[in-house]
Amino acid sequence: MEKSEFLKTYELVMVLDAHLPGPDKDAVFKDMTDTITKAGGKVTDQKVWIEKQKMAFPIKKIQDGTYHLTHFQASGAGVQNVRAALRLKEKILRSLLLIAK
Image 1 (spheres, helix red, strand yellow):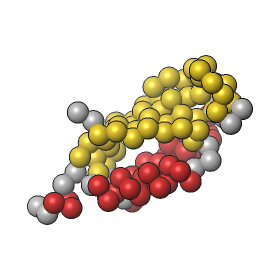
Image 2 (cartoon, rainbow, N blue to C red):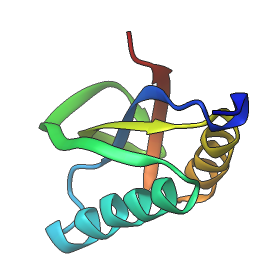
Image 3 (cartoon, rainbow, N blue to C red):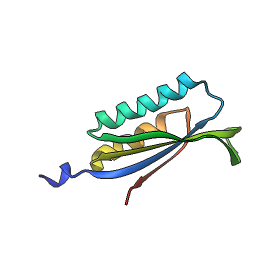
């Protein structure tokens, strides 16, 4: 196995507007799953972590957020593609991508 094929496990937390309709939220989650898969990754777990939470400060004038947690495996190059996609999604207010321990 080449070093570039080595897969690490990552955690991705995305914050979306809590007032978005359900189908819009599902579309964002499905789109990110597709992005991870296209980048050579594999989603192992995906769930809504917190359905509606008041944020400490408004982001883009939005007070409440939905927190979505995704665990996946990917290579370093694949993660760079995921990070780039996260920056381009307007419906994602904030995101955090970490290596899971």
